[in-house]
Amino acid sequence: LLKGKTALITGSTSGIGLAYARAFAAEGAAVMLNGFGAPDAIADICRTLSGLSGAEALHDGADMTDPAAIAAMVARCHADLGGPDVVVNNAGVQHVAPIADFPVDRWDAILAINLSSAFHVMRASVPLMRGAGWGRIISTASAHSLVASPNKAAYVAAKHGLVGLTKTVALETATDGITVNCISPGYVWTPLVENQIPDTMAARGLTREQVINDVLLAAQPTKAFVTPEQVAAMAVFLCREEAASITGANLSMDGGWTAA
Ligand code: NAD
Image 1: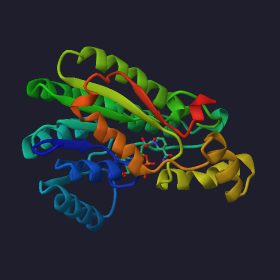
Image 2 (image 1 turned 90 degrees about the vertical axis):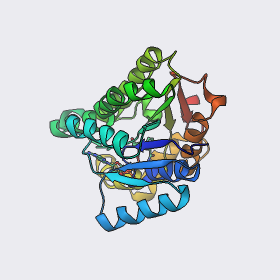
Image 3 (image 1 turned 45 degrees about the vertical axis):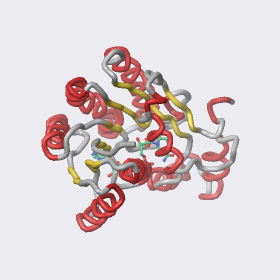
Image 4 (image 1 turned 180 degrees about the vertical axis):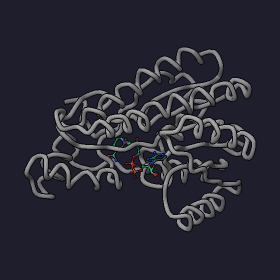
């Protein structure tokens, strides 16, 4: 499906982002990987992706809080790999605290990484996609783009904002062969979810098992975590010609969470 095309995925050294990278590489795409991690582990991932795709896979360490680094990453992708034909705004972080105690620097970082980075990536990528006459922009939003949970002010605000950004850019690119959509998973078992368990235990005075069963999966009627591979399969579908009319959408994959 993606032979001769290039996919740029922010935050793709781990979790859902890594699953997108693998899925696009399996469809033949060259991949620009982004995110933090040990150089050896990242080099291993690039080798694996290249083996899957038969195309190049490079890593760019741009920090999603740095607009100049983001623009440089998109330009480097265009120069070294072509495209980007598919971009996924996926980098995201979480912080769990009640509003009165919410650290100001965490608010700023979450808004920068989870929302503003998508603006900077789209701002740099849309002209390149217009030049190619084709493009797919996908953002990993969240069930928290539709509903809130206590103690996640920055995350919920950023994810709601990402949906508004997506709708706006979808309208601006509607006649350009470009689609712009969000995928909104419920809880996916990744390091992001695992790492917030201790803070939720502290904030609500619960055990680890109570957080998993009574907080996380309580919201998900299927009582099962979404898998990174399921999310990535939806992104691959959005790249198909059959998906050309899906734009400006926020596609839920949340085990029924937001149906309740
Ligand atoms: P993860 O922690 O496994 O991966 C996050 C990735 O982002 C990593 O590659 C990390 O290096 C990168 N990253 C973090 N800060 C960065 C920065 N400043 N600059 C560049 N890269 C940075 O998380 P995940 O669970 O795979 O989450 C990926 C996305 O999916 C996030 O946007 C998250 O909000 C969203 N999401 C996750 C879940 C879930 O349950 N895990 C649910 C809904 C939405």
